[in-house]
Length: 321
Image 1 (cartoon, rainbow, N blue to C red):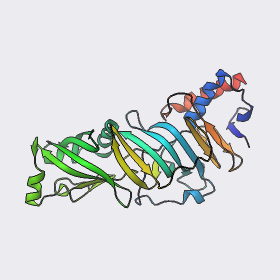
Image 2: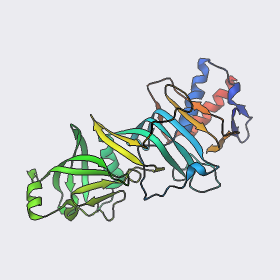
Image 3: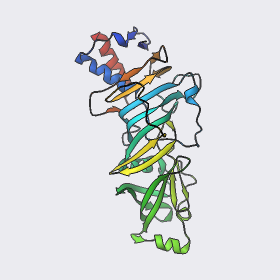
Image 4: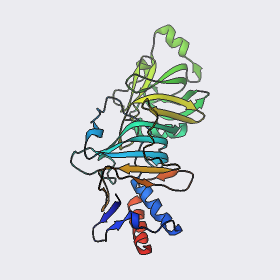
């Protein structure tokens, strides 16, 4: 079954009737890929956001991605190596609306996603500890072998500079645990002194008013679904590791099902409906598969300003048909 583009005041465009493989259709491929891309990224949300059984909902859109870079903001992005899941509207009975990142949920069943350490610095500074009374400020995240190096200022303790080297692991609830092996404050090693005095990181940092992060003894625990900007992410994080300057996260316990049997860079959507601006992407059958790809290094999606570019590209495509 074909996919249709429906737009108020414009004729019906049947994708299967577009000219192929003329170079002039590259803009349409780009527009479709950009408009159909969604977040990941980066990450899962544990039981803080209860799974809404999205796969059982008739309005769930089945999603598959490969080699996609999603930009939450200009300075926060995640690279999706592969992803399978479902996209649903938070409000049952409505169509997922790309223009409103707070209106839909991405439920991940299987994925491998990476976030660069400098991007994680932006996540923590701009989205987690952005409040004026946040306990930590000026955070810089780097790597040291297979461990994380985190620098910053203890804002709640007179802006004392600190540095810690910590190992990452995953909790049974799917949170990221960072266990410090070395701690410096004011450029002096204090981990041994803390142990001697019976002090824990939880005694020094209050995270009660900080969304997506908490302390447990000497450990920092990050909720991967809450530290990122919207849209909401659901899924079970099962592994996390540091590789070079990348924090690589694995969701699910099985290899991805190559249901669409596609190669290269793509985003595949099957079933239900998607809405973007005045456009509605309507799949007439759950067996319908839409594949949008770009023949570049990877597919990039930036929500900001995409609506105008999509309308312009769609208008150009209609003139070429």
